[in-house]
Length: 336
Image 1 (cartoon, rainbow, N blue to C red):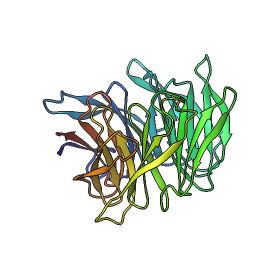
Image 2: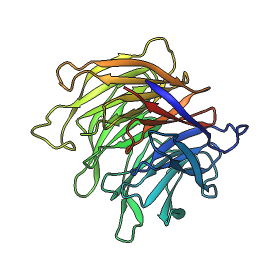
Image 3: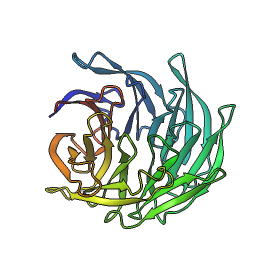
Image 4: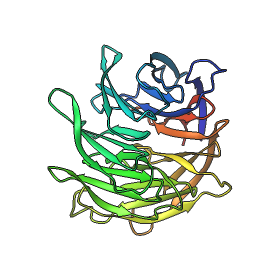
């Protein structure tokens, strides 16, 4: 079902097994960014075609911006910018010109490790979250500079991830305090739209929307995958709606957390990576909000150590990337 088609070392050499925290695909599907404990961001080209041998070729190493591990990377939706978030409490924005990435801005203000940074669908806003329990919203001006729009501290513990809705200015955050929070823009400031406590037993590590933004899955320390749906799809916009849990599945035969989840926009297959080194696939059996079932399709791949992140390619929907503590980025091909 999932076949490994490539293995690549983030640091380039097989003996250099520094942890890889994350990979992120450019929206065109041909560029991948990776980051890790070596304080560097690497940009890769996806070479070849899906029906032949695909491989990654490192084209750029950005290693002079951060002084500690780089925890996350993300491309802007227009493809012009790349953002990195680091344990050094800073966020760096790189601009792409003629295939090269150059640092153009460093955003500071968080009091501790920044765990995630990601652009909104419109690219007008950038959201960041941190071990300092806060979620920051930065707004881009006409000169493409970012300034602070709002600072919120709705969580009581470390905020692990922030995720944007695929079509609207709605943000979700996941936290060590077992909760998720939804945020919307009221025209002047960002405000908390909804709080869902006790979402998981322990840390909520990751969340992902489906392609329409009507459903959301979360994964956590309790090795549970949980499904949330909008309650008023026909009468309210996503940023005004409320969400409810409609299904959950505890993954059997493991005691380790699920660290990452990604939802395929083409075939609805959900992939997770976890602390037991395994990659798993899931499918929602029905789009009905009344009685959906989360179906576990099985363990389909693995690394030597923890799988920190998984990501579907937005252009080639059968290609999945994974990042691991074993120092590798692996490419996988889905056949269903």
